Image (cartoon, rainbow, N blue to C red; front, side, top):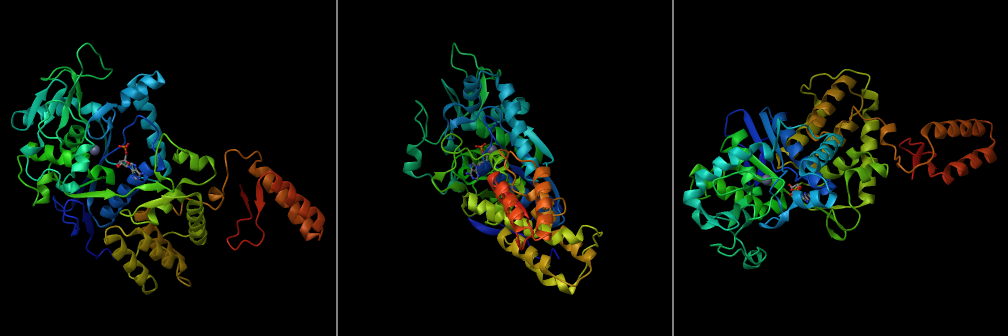
Length: 483
Ligand code: AMP
Ligand code: ZN
């Protein structure tokens, strides 16, 4: 049932390619991780839900997965194209804490979101500051042929490698205009791989190097950590679509220099065979931001009463290469859909899963699921295959459970771990406890049984005043909801 060849969209060739592992039987994947200077917003988390589904799919296809996600705790400037301040230094100054404290706090916050979204831990989290000696070695290795030194740092000469910028499909003049001019740069797109600490200044994070005290550039970090752990070339490199423009072209240029590979007609020369990018989660007002409007952290969704896996399902209901617009209505719809699924598996919880064998009642749904997920992770279609499998009736419960577990191993919705109660909307701000609600509903049931509709209505009114909506006759059987 995993027969369909896995096809993935390679941003480097802008085409679907059948996945063929570099090392037979294995899949080595690197995902650009967060810069831990602030909480992640739910758009950032979309990138890791996508990488998680990719990893689960590769394993489901029988490959031994090695997934690495990095944690950037130094070197990422406020502008991706090498200008501005170090995001970490800036936040540390604003919060009057050390960078190490800032990094630890936001790394933990990120990991909490990872767990809440049922994103599996990668084989390794690589932390940038643990790899600085390797970064210096990498830079030394390419400095003579590909770099030049300026007052502010060691710069990479993008004209020294073939096909620079192919991933971004050639820099437009307008694009280059966005890159801040640094006096002495040979090409507008040249970027710092080592940033010297300006004379007379001390940075909280700085290291000795052949180019003076300073810190590594952000692009250098990912080249070094991916190569160090996975070895060049590895299979798949992922990130959000913004990384297709600057960060990943720069990583690729460094990898070409380091590996002494030539042009990019052979994608492997870039350091990875396939480069994959998830599209953005957007707000109606435009790009998601941590600074303006409502800061959409996962915790905000939870505080408003939504189970975080409703957000995971919302992500899966769009293809990862499509833009997805966030709205509370869409999140609510995802929650309702998740409730239906959880209720459909409820009767299967008591039975043991049977291994998935050929079963005529599930053949169509399983084939559809395999084809969808193998078609560049078409999760919206895969979800309809799940719905079809859930709708199969008059079949051995153990077999059904086996099928649903198999599908959920890829989608990661934790259907057998969730309960209807856990999916109730329960805002943090609610003043009434669940025990009080249950007690009131019991009294109301008794009143109704005694045909005392006045009391029944009065109780309903009291509950409504406290934000509890009683849902009589709801086909889903959700007897109440907090709003
Ligand atoms: P950062 O911490 O800014 O490096 O971002 C972490 C990841 O989130 C990167 O892969 C970004 O490309 C990705 N990302 C940033 N904004 C969004 C968004 N609105 N939707 C989806 N992915 C995003
Ligand atoms: Zn990166």
